[in-house]
Image (cartoon, rainbow, N blue to C red):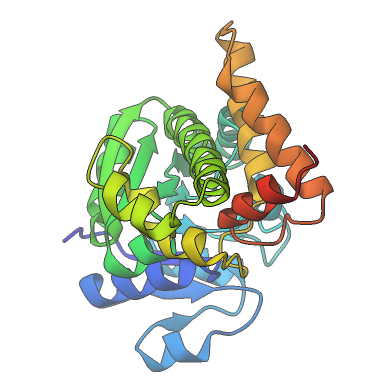
Length: 291
């Protein structure tokens, strides 16, 4: 257990279950979000009325907001995170631009004379992994900072330092490219099998034990089989994530093959009005495309 005290900013679909894991392990947790989270407070967390109050009470803050603009909106003014008066480690758990994280860290460090430091710590594993404490946590930053982050975030999964600041976001971009490509292939294969007279459940029960098996198939098999794409992990977020992956490809002079095709498919999916559905909506998307 780390000697640092920790807070969480953002208690959405991922932030709330991660906060519960942190509270159970560390015994003390300070939280803030747009709306007071009574259930977490009842469980023992301390509510901070403003981001500034949160920053004054803890040594480190896990930020689980959608992206960097939402975090930047919480930084300034008398109620902002930077209004605190103690050293603070910001652990950015959102899927964001690697360059954007580095730029934000430079700005925050300059404005606070180094009092506030930044680690990128995006996660993979979904809400199931957040609840079970089995997330893959991708860390980027100075080794001293990432060591602190790893100790603090260990209750949520497996935190691993992958390199300097921004490396975690590069890893998350790679992860999202794989997830997007895989779910598209799973949806397309489901349609191909069904239209060929094969029971999709029998197909995935069989192929799941071979090279086609994956955690994603395990997680989404029932949805793919039944056609349940009720909202969970919104498919539209893939466009943002694949945009960051495209930036990485451009920065590294990589002539990607899969990335532009997968990004184009998700843009078409969102344009078809399916972006708020779970990513398993790829089955419906493929089945409804004109031949």
